[in-house]
Image 1 (cartoon, rainbow, N blue to C red):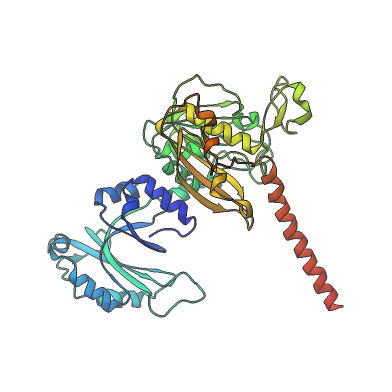
Image 2: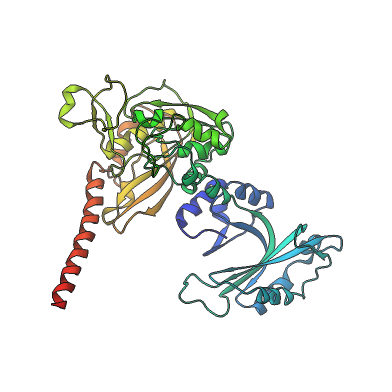
Length: 453
């Protein structure tokens, strides 16, 4: 069973955790996914990482009614059931319902009605050897809940997912946060899309307060990052937390990893411009995971020189860095993603993955707008809606070859290629949509007032 939001993100994440799962996803009936042909070892490996799936079960029977369920269960091979129904075993049966709450007495009645199964062991509610579950699906409309379930499943519990990580790593309880700190659940999803594992080296070029580093270090990866914001990297300046004016002396990314017991995996973070090369040539990273700035809550900027000062912007008012910091210039979204893909092509290992968010204006979006690179294969492209007219796409790419001189222009020969033209248009369209909604609201108010008069 799985959490409902971000459906395409969840499917792609689980496919990333198991290469064969795409072939075995035989049916999808929200909120329940039915898989065929996965071993219990496969299931345990997925559930040990995913924050999207709640629980996994070995399906013994299913049907639209309890009569159909009974028929299905009685057809299930006895040799598959018998190891879990022995006299010397203990068990319990849970009843889970989706979109409906049952009284305790009703749950007991449903359990008693399954007496046709030959359970020979003893009931143990506190510490059973085996757990069985009756799952009832009452649809997805809370305003139209049927009296009887739309579908019923019964099976043996195998494992729970890692949804507890969303609570334990919540940004609300994070030691060091910023205006754009990534949600814990999405951070773990991105780490899984990148297949981050122990001893990997993971890099975030727009590291911010390090939320993605926290998620990757949880899976045993060594982490590092860069950011152009001097204050954020050094953990100084104005605080983002409510009722706190200035950041404390120990608020920094290293402290975040220390909070979750993974400080030993912290390599370092640097003040650096993502548009400027600071790394030696050659492959360095097993994964690059990032959330570039969109120009909404964080500005898109890069370093420049005084001769480019026409397009320059002043440092923020709370900037406390040294006076020799170069002029700050606008950094267009189209340039950000071109640089990001080129950097990944040169510095990822073969098979390494780039995972990032791409902001888009929904009325104009088409798949050809996703930036391409001859060295990177597009693995998945999932949407998270931000508003009625904007969203962001979680893009996962995998490095398939080393760069060659001819690759820089290779994509131009592709008739489907249309370069991503983000520039500053996303920011303009984002706020124009908000303005339109505000204006419409005022017009409606004025119209109502006129009618009243």
